[in-house]
Length: 393
Image 1 (cartoon, rainbow, N blue to C red):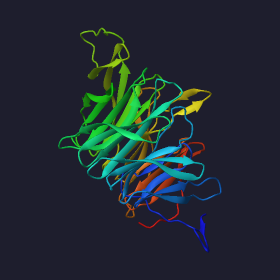
Image 2 (cartoon, rainbow, N blue to C red; image 1 turned 90 degrees about the vertical axis):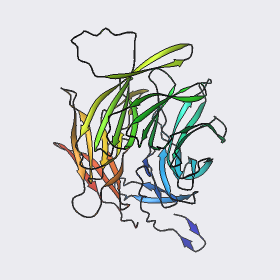
Image 3 (tube, rainbow, N blue to C red; image 1 turned 135 degrees about the vertical axis):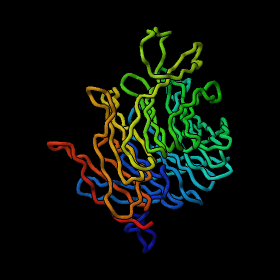
Image 4 (cartoon, rainbow, N blue to C red; image 1 turned 180 degrees about the vertical axis):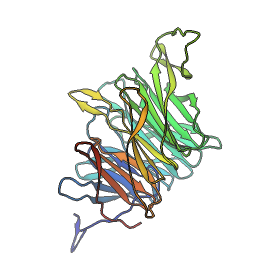
């Protein structure tokens, strides 16, 4: 509660912007979402305490289009996040206890910034981390930025032209057994473009085809075997799960053996070359309208070990969210649970997120409302909807 003379803030009502990437739930428990030109800091319901907007952050002069916490590889709470805005800029923020400050403003795009993504990268000094940032804009470019450890200055490393297309979503991760970053771009050409950092710049190594309409969302994770899993969703109402694995020499294939078609690419890592294969793992069908978000359940960290639950959450304009899991026996991905809204004028969901522990899920709708469900473990799995305070839009 902030007080200024005889005036104090008692309650904040702020709707979520109509953008698929305007909400992010961090491992620190806080939900950030764009509301007009501001970023709202929301504390979800905790025990008997109802959820509330703690404060709003001001930096941008036009609508906030994207908000994303920057995850830490060891599962510790996030303390930095990136924001994209229609004012042609993006910003990097840092949280210190209850205070938020702007670290740097990224300028260079000639039109609205629609996506901002970031990850931490190890340097030659293992104790230091640099921050790799990627932004996309309706000016048909993707810009790649870097912030060195100990400096607040962000430098643009590369500008990628999308030609007559533009990127609708971006995802960053590192290739298996390396610290080499890989960038997935979902474009409006119905394809996913994979870029890998080689030297000081990124080069395109593969194009994944399969979607029959715009690719609206992409997100990486790593399974317990160390392979990369990439989830993609689109306006064709399908979700695709891709696997990226390290190739170990030439595999012998029998003439009568049926195998899934794969794409291969080779990178230079240090003084040796490494080859990777990309295969389509699954195609998930269940939604009846455009799918705007597909997100992996956060990994579980315990005593230095990491476990990735194979659970995927999707949100669609058909007013539902679906939780997908592979069947333990057959390995076929199935819709395990479905939640959503019945009737009314919600007009569907524009985005979704897991809570840090995976026991709650949140969605934001076309009308700006937040919808929250919590997992209740009874004789069977139940998702209980939690009341949210109403917001103006």
